[in-house]
Length: 194
Length: 194
DNA sequence: AGCGGATTATGACGGTCGTTATAGCCAGGC
DNA sequence: GCCTGGCTATAACGACCGTCATAATCCGCT
Image (cartoon, rainbow over all chains, first blue to last red; front, side):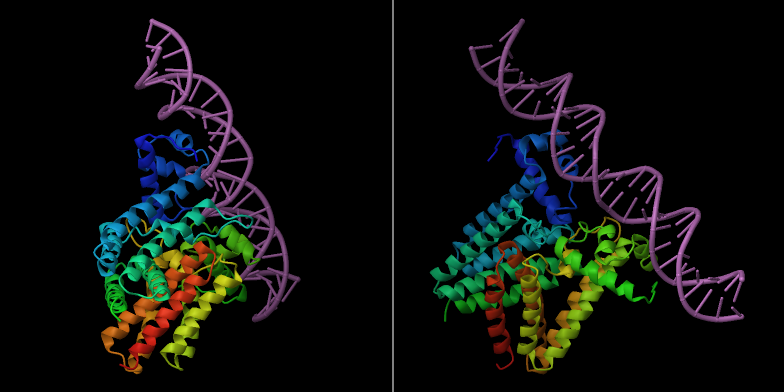
């Protein structure tokens, strides 16, 4: 893996994640990413010699890691607290951007792969989703949920929140997130007692 | 609203919905849509004089209506049957296309609107999501669910299924849909008795 | 001071984009 | 016959795309 160590590099990745979460992958050009990070175009190909594909992959992983860190931290107080943090995280993004931004991982996941082979960014998206689910499932098991039940609930939470963010963007309202939050909260609470 | 009545017109709309569900809106060009529908490029601007925006809007509404019809039909046998049909519908699309296609409504919903005004296609997406939720919620109420509970569950179902389809595409597996299906099924079944 | 590798500046390559204009086709009604 | 109006063919417009090559610049080290 080609890795420079400038701090401009991380600025580019973070900016790319932000732009992808707003416009989608193919609607975001490398020139715009560079400009958004106040970096010259040549720098992007210096830090990311494999081009747009590499940049997208790292943007997905960047977001994945940051969300996972937040999740890991908050899950120490239990699954309900973790769920609340997960919901609050996306709620803040949606509200702060006036319903313009969503999740870059989802954005990458919904673009068709070329016929021959699957792009690295898509694989990275799958790994990020898996990581988030694993964190939730582990916490659920630790609090008394059965293994299969924990896995199903974790998948439901990640999928529901991702989908709800998209609903909020379309409707330009946070009502879907509030409704989903209520239902998921009751579900999780019920799963760690019975 | 400008409306011709050729049958080639509908072919273009259906093809556009399919392509958008695979690649996303901005990655799908009008030239490709025309070619995919075996129609000349000039025809698209003849039938859809407002250009890509109009074509996207009609593609969203086309999918929305077709799914709503299926949902309405199956919901006559109750919310559980409706949920099953909804899940089966998306499962078939994902599997039949080898995880290449998803939901065009979601695809449109996750693209940033321009700063000044919001595009018609995004508004159409919001209306489609609302219609699907309304159908589910009405059926739940008819089978004994409280009004607020029905609305929350309907939102959760639509959001969870949309999100799960994206998860399936990333992971190239239907396991997420199977897990989500199990959880939603139990939830719905429980909500129409107690 | 001077060297060397990391970073940037600049410009170009072929290609595709959305959109428009214009001229041609070809059915059906007078 | 001919004309009208829906449809198509063809070409072009300026703009942007991902990517690459090359030369200039910077900066820490000896």
